[in-house]
Amino acid sequence: MLIRRASAALLVLLALVACLLAVGNRAGIDHTIENSLRLDGQFRIVADAIGGFRRSHGRLPNAKELGAVLPPASSGSYEVWLAPSGFDQCDRDAAKYSHLADSDYVLIAWRGEWWECYAPTRHMSTLLVEPAAYTMLGAVWLDTIAFLAFAAVCLLVAFKLGMRRKAVEEVLL
Image (tube, rainbow, N blue to C red; front, side, top):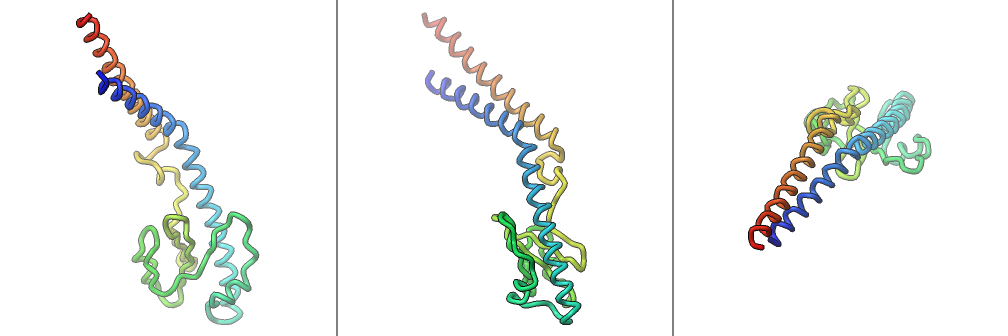
């Protein structure tokens, strides 16, 4: 009897978590895309600064020179660096970025869990700004339906566990 109650309570808890995920799913995706767009803007600012330096000096800047030509970073911005030659830690398609020609360069930024990469001369980026890229089933509405369906099944099973317990108690009394 205790196991049934605990199981039913756990299923109700799982249903509540699934409902929270269904409601908060879009907000989390929007926040991630907003950060990706902000980082993309930073990549482009750094690429413009490097392009100007390259035109005037005929080479890529070193770290000190790059810091001197960049505008001051705003709060909440990512730190962007020139990737060392052969850098292979890009989140997606690492091989594409580590084998670029000498005339190309890669900008990198640590996202907190992974590296984002941007190759301005090739217009390649690991940044994803489509909502479908952050969903399990390819669309936010499909994920929401899946979370809600899971919650409904959990509640149904919890209800059945509760009904069986009551039926057993009535027979014993």
